[in-house]
Image (cartoon, rainbow, N blue to C red; front, side):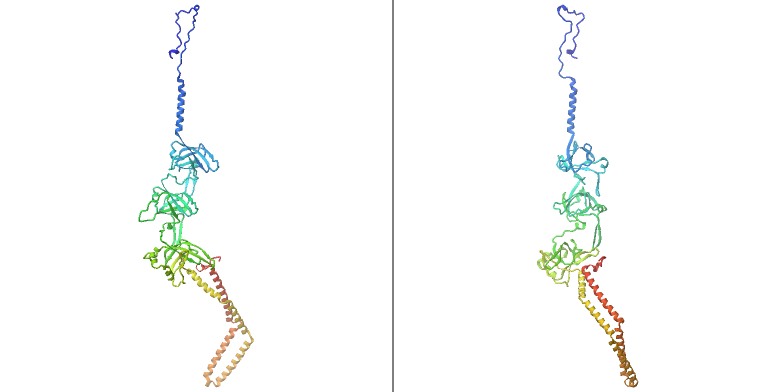
Length: 576
């Protein structure tokens, strides 16, 4: 306590009291003292205010970024409870869920922890982690108990983005995964799907991560991801093919079965390989396009250059001939079929099937370049056609009915001239061996059918009827009886002559006797033949009936073979 705050000391006891008469009071005198401006009482609120301000500044400084994400739906998400996770670590919380103004999507607002700004790039991906079970992928099973959450995959692009569009499904491979992406072009997706494995020599080294239809709608673009360090196996000359299922091929070599693995049989797969080359090919850059071939044989097929194009016009059925069918010269493949068309000639009312083929001149065994040979003989193809060069369809496999085109020289081929169709030279054709045999049989049947079999049968029936009428006539029977009587008289006369004249005319009479006996036997045979119940007459009638039935069967056979020429090899199927 300061001196100014101390109370005044009382006067001593021995001090004389004031004299009332003098007008002096005996009460103590008050003193006015001045207090200090600041007191210790104000220190406590000032300290509390400073602590509060420091906490506010610290909270604002440690607060993470606030982001918005657009999802198709917010199934299972709850504001204030649903977490935002990266590698199963909580890095934020969903604070608000609202429906967009156009009612097309859901806007999810989330607050992330401090220090997560480096995760928010232009290509950062968000999705809702839910249970997902497919043939090629199983994920999100832990959410069965804990509930769904918002998953994050940091991007590698420019930082600073705060509004994002969430994915409909979890990505197969995140952006920051080690490896590279490549793109495949295919005509159809087949059994491929998201997560379909990519194999190299039977080992899975990647998977399909996306696929889209091209803008023109003609082909597909399939994105694949190859994990590091296996992405170094992709070169600019690498070939990819569809290894899904089991590839069964029946050809001249028999049945060939090709498959990559049991997993590829169940869920499909893609395989790749780099052809061996003298020089080491350069590595493929990321997102380079490759063609996806249907099988390994097509993928590893060597490219052929300077191929020659020809057209072969067929008039018979080409069922079994497909694009890619081989073109052979005396059993050696020199090309393949590239196109098959159908044309109708209205003037001649005829159907033509022009088949376009490509022939590799390098496989012809030429000792000199073809251009040099052509320069010396511009009419080379014409000379070959005059020497009998013809194209002919032949069966490649009797079980499948596949056909191929065989080129060969036929000395007895009908004459043909060289001409072009739309600027492409035409190689004349011959009917197939089966068709040629069928044509010969049809010619024979046509000739048989041209015979007047019915008229011949009618004539034979008339002849038999006349013969039967003659055999049944009384005149013939009377003549036979008279002839028998004459023969009897002649025999009697002969016996008499034999007794009287025989010694002298024995040889002559014996000859006459033999002649008469022969005539008698012949007449007996004629009588037996023309009798109504004679076997010969009955058999003759039956034979004519069988000839008539055979002619009818031949006609039916000719009509059936004309409709089904393949029945000569395959036989008549059931129900036909």
